[in-house]
Length: 316
Image (cartoon, rainbow, N blue to C red; front, top):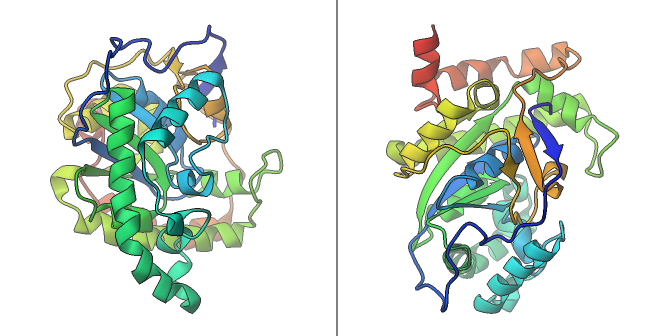
């Protein structure tokens, strides 16, 4: 993905721009911006950008927290310090440790009968833990808004029932040709999917995401187009902040600190990245993808509200 470029910078603590706290802040009711949709849609750079706004912390992919026992895979002194403090303050039900929570998150889990009973049993502890985790992140990070880029729409559905947080849904979509090309790369550690597999994955993800998105209050949801974000980050970010009732000024898009994200793609391993606004190389065209994703092109054209839509209309 072209818009993010790494730049070197001196180390900085996660609280460097916030006043030192002599004692822990009381637990707050955080606003959680949950980014859902297909993987490889640009969620990491979107999360990093939002995390550079005052009062916002980019937590990364929080679905990995239980699986990793709260130990961030990305490493780094400041990141490890932050998440160690979070670990020390949250109580984890032993039944939730490891990969067991996947039965409540993975889009394919409803098709596996062996998970049905486990889902009902774990739903209560899972929701209680999620609420406590977000409130603790807000407390440790001295933030009012949290960005979670876990992707899974079924996780979003569970979060809709979590007490003690205000949930905002960001349904992130991207040119399907780019998503298919990204999943077919052989220079990353993640699994490689064929175009047919990726299209099936997108269909399932989008179906569940659409259901969750439309059931969420309109004032707390936004459709975010990755291409709009790259072309007009000011307008898209401003709309997201306004939706979350944040008056924070826009960040410096040329110098975005990656912060302490628990997990994300390789961009999050850098200290500083920038949105350079350059157009990525067009992916190889797939007729199969064009045909299979045509219905979703129509669906997304009808969904709303759309982040950055007002700026796009003014540009016309």
